[in-house]
Length: 172
Image (cartoon, rainbow, N blue to C red; front, side):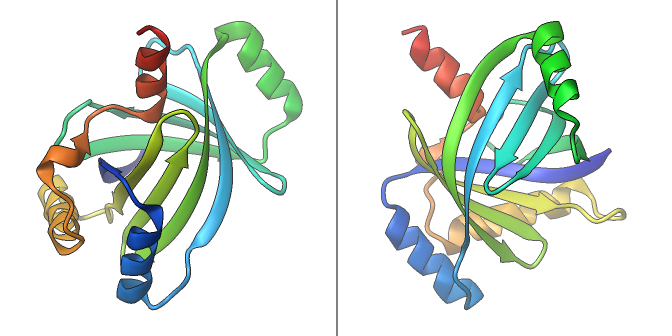
């Protein structure tokens, strides 16, 4: 399985963080409209990610719900047959759908996302993609340095996935 270190925080202003990241990277973000359909899954999380214009992938991942930078292991399957998606819906059922506009930047081995999530708000997320020989601690150090460099406070960190946050919101 592939590995990365993830951390996520709630932010208030998309444009200020886009500008900060533009200054850091010297590039404009890639802008993606994403729809993540989460399936009921007893072991980890399983989602179908659909991006415009015509890209989809199935992603299975496992990670804890911690505030600190945490290990995520994942597998991805691209080029899905529509019949497979129908089968997953029938077999597992849809748990929740997350829609977002994602501003994607790359800082060395880190994917930085600014996500405007429908019915949730705006977030920043780091995914430090670990190289084969890198330790979890190295990835955590990279994530913490990015938090500090971008001025993200510990109080704004969140531990759960967007799917968990949407589900808890619907049960309020």
